[in-house]
Length: 292
Length: 276
Image 1: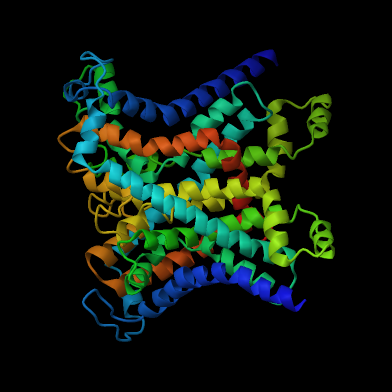
Image 2 (image 1 turned 90 degrees about the vertical axis):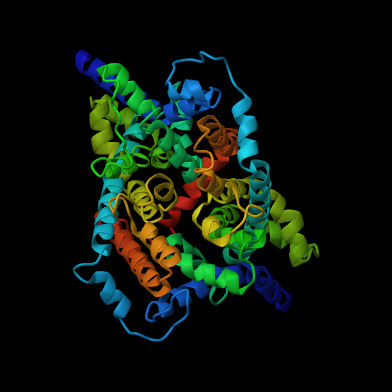
């Protein structure tokens, strides 16, 4: 038994060290420096809650950043997830096109966000982009030059479109869960005269509650990570029209060089994420613990 | 009744068609455009009035050192997978096999990463990696990526180890096989499906990651493909055909890996989603 104990420690140590180095150390730095005045130029003196007060004072830019992020989280937790669920319901119980559609729907989810951003820069290009080209053909208005990412009126919607419709992961997860419903339940429902819609509404969806909750958590958390696609398409502009919290952190830390203020936002971002997860778990009445 | 059924079928067919179009048209359009001359791109021509042009791909390599970025991405991804899967599966094995004080605590701690948005750690990690003299190095990225995927690989492996009967090791021990020998000779070969699942998910993470690559690297000898797109957006500005080609070059590996290893990707996503 003595030998075993030694091996347990040896097997655990690399992962724990890696975790400690990347996560624990940075969490420690994140929290402690958020109460100081650390910038790229130095500092690091304790200033109490000054950064947090700065962040949430009425005139702060952070409010509009937060608003953008909240809207994106809400849209992604609802529209995006429901789209994925509907696709899963339609594709359920292998039809001839199921695997083809599933593969295609996953494509935007598995390529790098930077590349997806590039695709959108191209198709929304005012001069030669697919969207404007098509509209010129349909409307006959050759001068049509909508600049989707730069026009304050369309920037937010355009950025939203780079992720809102692409719920391939949601669809795949829901479909995987649906295979656990025994066929006998469907057969019984059909014998009782239930229509496909009734079966979906009253049998399948209630059984999918947990996985829908899970995918909602994934979708919401994803909205707290999107830096790449925003940096590539709009850089958060015009103004702060398409800035989310990651973009704001990036700008504060690496462009304004105000490390402490960035880290105060980081602390807030983590707390925001935790609250979102707890809320979603509550809404979907997900009871099992995080270890499933 | 019959009419309702036809209506429902039609609506769902239209819906699926829309979803498919929205997903694939951007790819197809950019792919097709990557073979067009700049004049054809600008004039928004249908088809290929000036013929198929492969010159864009050549130009893409000229405008940006794409081959270098490719090599960087391959190095970082290879070691990112190796380190992640080795460390996480070793930990997963003992955490799922042996009950000891703190096992549960460690499992929860190691999966904490799932609840921390990477963007929150931008500055702290920047600081740590510079302090450790790892900034602008492949090693820095490898370490960060291995850690980012730790929780997911841990879940994939733990759930798989749980399906292997304990009797297997017990009989091995009785026959005098040691701990390490049992793990490498008997257990690990059985977990090949889980290992490949974890590796594929980790591949996608390493190959696609952007934000840490952006802040932890500062020159082309280290930069990976996703940030290459960002940095060369402006130098490509005059040559859209080359930019299309560069984008296709970045996208291709992910798509090929996904199509070949779809089963593993799906399995990995399912295992990783217990995080809810």
